[in-house]
Length: 345
Image (cartoon, rainbow, N blue to C red; front, side):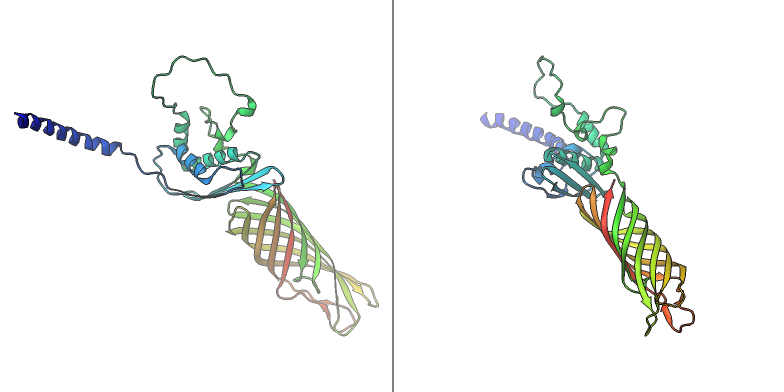
């Protein structure tokens, strides 16, 4: 009798266990989201694991399961100001720059920007979901609104109904398009007789991988003379230039561009040690190829340098009447360079 009572109980247990297997398989949580985070920050900032976990938490049950690759670097600017450079490498490349005083708040804002770029709907659902409680809540007194100093940054608040999330409305420091005004020392070898130094100034517009510049400059003095004689001329060069550039190397701090340029020159000559004074001018158009480097140093300033190979399309000959020989004729190709500071806005 003991054996006959045990058999039905064992059979029932097997049936219940088999019935539960599919349910448990369906309810089994998926593995953790793959987030490849490269994190650099000074002492006092959250750990990289905290930022990674915040990204995963904000995405919640998102259906977008592509791997995420992110570089975040936090650096100090001056005594207390912080600069956070964010670069998303996968799945959708993008860059952002944040400035602030609280590293923890900036880190949370960066995690929100990353999550919004992956799946804004999942982030909105995560923000709108009520907190889960084990037991029914009991009546409690209403909580007073937080003081202004305790309120989270705008980037961390859930989006208001009917409005796009805050991460879709970046402030000026985070825009994909920015402008700059720059002033540089200019060195010219292509369009003057001897290596000449001058000044150049211009403006730039940058959007993503593309940059365009318009500039003007002057090389105030360069001299040339007829070979074997004292007679010659003093030269002054004015120019207007347009550059179009494509970014070849991107980094949160350093960027390298490959550029093509068109430049209109006006080369002016004044006779030197000649019997009859003369003044002559020649317009010269040139094209060129080269590179440009941007280095962020302290917002809103950055260091810029450029080196170009320049080929003039006209090569006028400067001569002195009644004397044999040429004072100067532009070479078939030469180089020009500049180095200076840019004010970014």
